[in-house]
Length: 505
Image 1 (cartoon, rainbow, N blue to C red):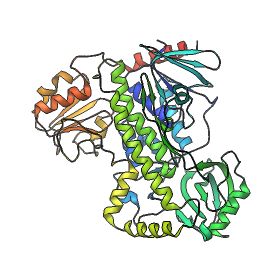
Image 2 (image 1 turned 60 degrees about the vertical axis):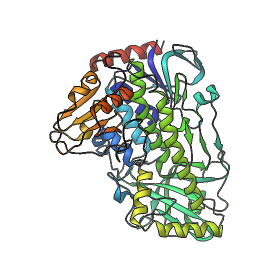
Image 3 (image 1 turned 120 degrees about the vertical axis):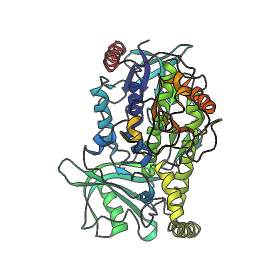
Image 4 (image 1 turned 45 degrees about the horizontal axis):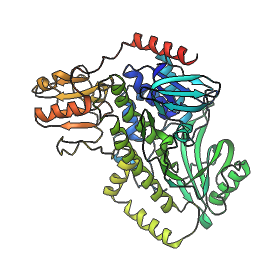
């Protein structure tokens, strides 16, 4: 093998997957088609669940310290809650442009010995019983035990697999842009002008000169142009005038593209030794950075399962649960985004039935219970995975909240990338002993209830019997004593460097 895992695509999803694999001691090579990292951002916000997962890896504090990343309030179909949908969240979403996030993750990987191999365009893919062989445009090949396809909405890997990608093709477009705007006050996050024209404006922090940047979306009658038609400065200025009159002007157009309402999801996330993640697995309107966050959550879900499989520790069914869990989560995101598209009337049809429905929905959004419901869905914290034979506790299958356990926070204890068992009464250590090579046990945890947490931060057993704990440990972490231990950091760095040299030929 040239490497154990080959990751194709160095966006947020691919970089997150690589970090998870390296944390588990799995030799990983990351390749990307582009000769250098793109300075452009296709997303601009990091949601609660993703922020929590980054905290569980020790990456949140350095990310937030890397620049101006203001907190946001969130919206659903352009309808804000009076106090913000983030008001009930454990962590409000943060404005982090995709380009900034990619740079941060790539630099973190480089500090651990993994450098993205750029300018590698994938043209061929073959699988056998033992490995995947990837062929690139320059004739080089890389042979890996598994391949993670994180190469975007126009995924080459998905095309080479001829993977079924059912759903709806785009029927209309709107403009999305990163801009600097004039005007004394920042407009409301979503503003509707006359004759169905609308604009959405969100903070993106500041540029290199400390000037505020905004993410802008524009839509309405006559604004649905073919995707390949370039977005001009005059088009953006005219769109701003249609909504804001002379109150807001364009100072600088940094980046612009056309977005569509296409909604598709692959039928299967796993194709033997190839795993699809991020936009390679699902595409939809980029409302609230749902695509980027869903992709990163794909990677957090996949990383530890793939690592356990590579290291020979995983039960036979484990890697298949990646499809089971993330296809369900992705389908829910697509439904939410499609509902938002309808409620927004983002093509500016002026349908009075849509207007009436939007008015009713806005009234419902005044209710605290509705705000909590929608806030959890937007934040990613409502995703519940099935946990077979583990009881019916309210926390089961959900991402665990952080907690102060005395000497450390719960999230800090997950930074090893291993499972975690909280044993507050000291009665479960014996049942968990055979899995101590892959599950950390914290006894006498202050104020905690018995809890088994997967490496991705989800509760997979809560307050059951020792026998049910053993079943859950075997279900998620494999047979006791199976597989090999993770390498040391030094060994890992050397292994990855050797694999990169092999991959480069």
